[in-house]
Image 1 (cartoon, one colour):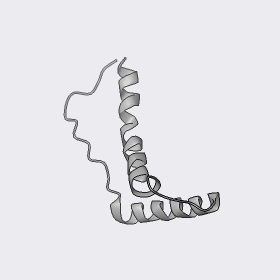
Image 2 (image 1 turned 135 degrees about the vertical axis):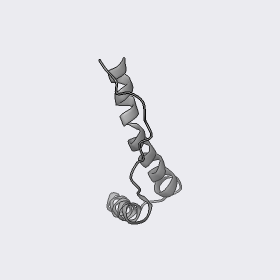
Image 3 (image 1 turned 45 degrees about the horizontal axis):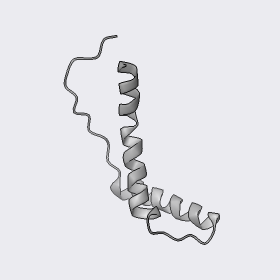
Image 4 (image 1 turned 180 degrees about the horizontal axis):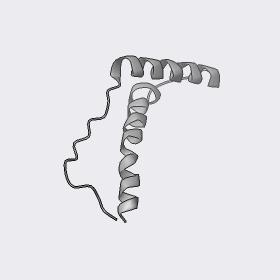
Length: 67
């Protein structure tokens, strides 16, 4: 059970990133081709990394898990 919880917790940052991608790029977007989608996706990633990305701040201060 502890292993499963750790795996689910590690998906959090990935889920957050994809939710940002959907809200900021994909939700109301219109693409003329797959090449257009690719170009806009790469441009968004470049913009996100330059202006929005911040390191995750770990706040867990408890004891390490023992199995």
